Each structure stands twice: as structure tokens, then as C-alpha cells.
Image (cartoon, rainbow, N blue to C red; front, side):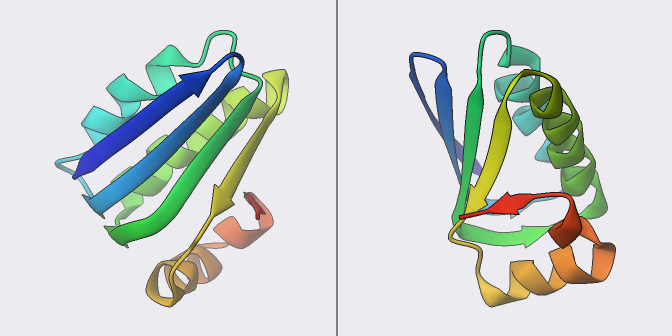
Amino acid sequence: MDIIKEVNGNEMDVQLVGRLDTVTSADLEKEVKDQLDGVEKLVYDFENLEYVSSAGLRVLLACQKIMNKQGEMIVKNVETDIMEILEITGFTSVFKFA
């Protein structure tokens, strides 16, 4: 998976490309979750995300919990297959979508 991250002031935009799974979730944790100090708006772009596993959902949920305290997290460009996973797991009620 590729993580394309852009920080502009207190906003972090993150585009995920490929599969967010057990192997790659640690990369996301290191690249995003562990670097959220001072971020008030976190935007995930899922346009090129092909798959998300429970390990990936765990990292996304951890980011959401942090952002609930210091700002907002938005998920955008969610493909149908990924949205089905989010619906089945109940994450559609946790995330804010654009």
C-alpha cells in the first residue's frame, strides 16, 4: 500500500492506495496515527483503496478517537466494496463522510 500524505497547517490529507490489511496497517499507524499532534482536520481519501481488513479498521478507529478530541476526521471517495465493509462493521456510524 502507498500512503500519500500532505500536511497543510493544521490539516492532514491522506490518500491510501492499495490494500490496508494486517501487513500494511502498521505503516499507516506510523505515518498517520503517531503524527497527529496539532492536526485539527484529518481527511482520508479512499478513492484508490482496494481493500480494508479488521487490522486496518483498528488503526482508522484509533485515528478517529484522537481526532474526536482535537478536531475532525473525514473520509471521502469511498468505493462501493469498501463502503459495504464499513456498513457491515458499523463504521458508517463512526466516520464522517464527504
